[in-house]
Image 1: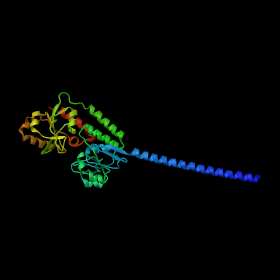
Image 2: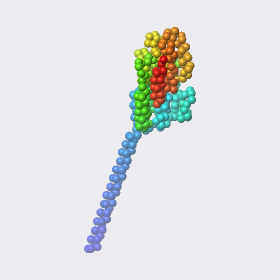
Image 3: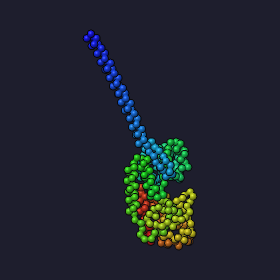
Image 4: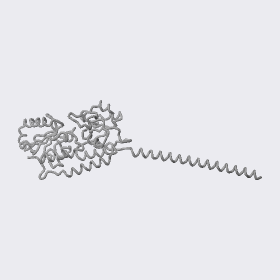
Length: 327
């Protein structure tokens, strides 16, 4: 009888041990499932946290799964900002003169007016930064997997908006914020010219083709912030170039600017000589105060002939000095 009891007890213990083992396995299995579930949740949250969304100058909303691997740009000012924020730039605007050693090995891809599509396709950037005028060419690039982000630089504020955009795109928001804070502080410290605003004519172009820069252009914005008065503020804007207007000799003579500032992409001496020759053809130009007093100024092309990027405060300082030197 005792032996039978011992057998029964042993059997019961084996059953209980088996149940315990099964229960432990079930708990372990449930724990593994929970860990796997948590891992999946964390993975999803990680993807969500690394995704990027920006709104460009045209208002389009562009999404990225992560920081773009490579960027190309057609603007020297945008290039300047991208380099300052440590972007991997593999394509830059073509340059006719000397370039800094830090960018000379970056492939040239043309300029906003003449993009080199063959070179752009060859380097195949994740992102191409361009002005809104490039939109007519964008579809082909986007079909090849390159996203186009548009920027503009018609004011200091526009440039700061671009800095913020690039900061978000590159995951460098703090660096972008510091850069913008520096620009804002310096802009505030650049005092305007004392006294009455100096009547100014801003002329943009090359020999034979001249336009007048309006207040909604970058040079117009800098002129206003430096304390100048744009005498062409109400000139009708060009349809294709809304920041500029055609020369109106009659209105210019009527408003008699104290200084004429010339803006060009290059060859400042040649542009000044050609413009003076242009003025010589019309005797009325000679009666302008700006011409009589020798106040025809050629603005530096690297700061005014193109987007100056982070050097926009240097452009503002040059504008202030030019106004202060008017005789």
